[in-house]
Structures are given as C-alpha cells and as structure tokens.
Image (tube, rainbow, N blue to C red; front, side):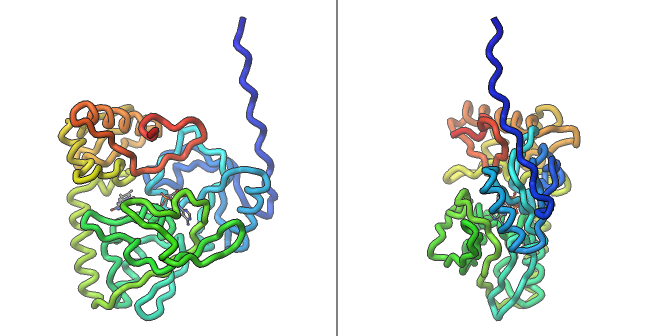
Length: 314
Ligand SMILES: Cc1cc2nc3c(=O)[nH]c(=O)nc-3n(C[C@H](O)[C@H](O)[C@H](O)COP(=O)(O)OP(=O)(O)OC[C@H]3O[C@@H](n4cnc5c(N)ncnc54)[C@H](O)[C@@H]3O)c2cc1C
C-alpha cells in the first residue's frame, strides 16, 4: 500500500501589480555569498508609503515579510523562501549630518557611511569600513570588530516601522549585546538610525580606516564571495582558532570549503550550493565538538521554510 500524499501547500496569492513586486527572484543576486534560491516575492519600494503598503498586504495574505540589506550575513536555502523580501535601497538610502550626529537610512552601507563621516571630520565609524552590511542589518547583530567597537556604541535612536506605524525607539529601549540586539526577530523594520559620532580630523579617520582594511585584506578572503565570520566566538575563545586547530582549513563539501586564509570563513568556487555550505558548517561543528567539546553557534543567519538545518539547531 502506498503512503498517503501530504497535502500540497496552498498556492501563493497574486500580488496587486501596483505594489511592484516581482515573483521568484533569485536571492543569489542579493546575498554577498552569491548563493540562495528564489524569494517568492521581491520588491524595492520607492518610499516609506510603499514599504508600509507592501507590509500591510503581506500581513493580509499571511506571507512573511523579510528585509534584505547587504545580504552579507545571510544563508538562503537552495529551495528559496516563501516570503515577501524587500530591499530598502530606494526608500531608506539617505544620510543627513547635524553637528556630531548623523541620521542614516537603514539601507546605507556601513563603508559608505564611514567614508562620509570622515569627510565631515567625524570619527567613530572607522571600525565599520570593512563590514559589507547596511545600517539596518548592522543593528540586528550589533555589528562590530574584534577590539569591541560596535554600532551599538553609537546609537541614539532608531526609526522603525512597527505594525504599520513609524516610531522612534530611543536607545534605552533597545537591548544591545555581543552580536545580538532586541531588534533582531522583533518584526520591526528598521528605517533609519541616529548615531552620535566624535570630532576627528578626516586624515586621522582615513588613516585608521586604511590600516583596518589592509589588515582585513591580509587575513580574510575578501576577494571571494563569503559570509564573513560563519560562527560566533565562544566565550573567551575564537571560533577561527578552534576550527583551525581542529584541522578544518580547506575542508570541502562540493564547491564550498573552509578558507585556507581564515578558518572562520567559508568560500566557494562558483559551483557550490547553499547545501554545500551547510555541509561544511556541519562537518566543522562536528570536528570542533569532537576535539574540544565546544558547540559552535552560527553567526550567519538561516533563511528557509523547512526545518532548520542541523548546524542551526540549538
Ligand atoms: C566579508 C565580510 C566581512 C564581515 N565582517 C564583519 C565584521 O567585522 N563584524 C560584523 O559584526 N559582521 C561582519 N560581517 C557580517 C555582516 O556584514 C554583518 O552582520 C552586517 O551587519 C549584516 O548587514 P546586512 O545589511 O548585510 O544584513 P543582511 O545580511 O542583509 O540581513 C541580516 C539580518 O538583518 C535583517 N535586516 C537587514 N536590514 C534590515 C532592516 N532595515 N530592518 C529590519 N531587519 C533588517 C535581515 O532581515 C536579516 O535578518 C561580515 C560579512 C562579510 C561578508
């Protein structure tokens, strides 16, 4: 006797044409690692009204809404995501300086913001010069660098779209920790952030940024598509040190492999799939657990509809 067929998922609704959403947009076009299957709907709304209209429609038809920034912390399933994915690059791309404060749209890229701040003789963002993410993305994980500097140190307030309303959330109402903030998973769409910078001569800002970029280029596979640090650092240790000590540099699954330059980076040869990257993550996690008894936790975020792949399960 054959097993009964599972019920087929209900078909996705057609989006009203005036929302400007396209169907089945390959997310590989929008992730820094250049991998990922299709988003059921994808849009680049022109302004905040359009963002709110799309969000309202997604709520009405019960399709999840996701925002993609620089796509630099995302691993998207090969099968894609049944979601409305929005890029805010048209709606939230402005930068406004006011004394030592800057209000930056959520889609502003951190390196561009750091450069513009330096041009205004403002320091504080030098650490962000090599982080290929947006302000909105950085605020989910409190993006920062190894010496402890992070975006959370600068935040004064954040503008969000919450349940169709634009609100200003003061810093005191946001909890900010190592690579996590209370904005992550809250359902708020970040629209902009007000950051407090410090007066610093442009030449000094630029010299420090150059030095930081040179270090990155020497120590990280910056020329290859990747996800940055794949695993978070465990307390009092470094994920990269553990992965290297477990002999994982160069470990490959299909076209994806652990970088031979920095063990906490996974790179690929252009013929890889997301499944290959997940396979490398699982193998790395297993070896580090076997040799050091440490369970590495992904820093990169998973986007998919099915069960969480094993490296992402807690
Ligand atoms: C080469 C490389 C180097 C890196 N170096 C660092 C580093 O030094 N330090 C560090 O902390 N990270 C680093 N990263 C990781 C990554 O750049 C950061 O996590 C970055 O902040 C992610 O921003 P993003 O815009 O790319 O977010 P995405 O990857 O696009 O999205 C990440 C999450 O943020 C959400 N999101 C994005 N925008 C919004 C918004 N407007 N509103 C609500 N949610 C939003 C997304 O929905 C998703 O959940 C690196 C990555 C790469 C590829």
